Length: 186
Image (cartoon, rainbow, N blue to C red; front, side, top):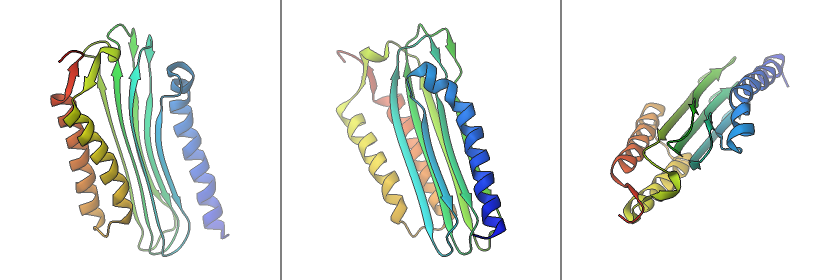
């Protein structure tokens, strides 16, 4: 491994430690409800894609869940992508609501590298999370968004088109939350 790649590994570890320190308190207090997508690429002519999608019902006094996408690359002619999408359905009685959302993309000594990190997080406190649910259409659409997000791993889209598609999927999550999250009995 070259000195540059050793440096990248150290930087990636430091960056991941920073991310972990930002979201670790949430693990302890929110029952491990953090969401992370971490992609590290040090192989030339390769592609690394990580996608994480979580919907969490949080019934705690302190809601400090973390959502993070980290993409780190040190290679030639490579693509590194990390995408994290998280939805928190929280109890209205929470006294502290301080979720964290972080996206970090880092290229170190790269030639012709494409690196992308996108993180999206929604927080809904419109009622008891146990008493709200998604409509059948909302559940179907969320499952489809998850499948489409994972399938982008095999996509031959340009990086800009890939980011645009990820943004569309995130907008669709927002649409489902606005239109297909209902109180029990509805």
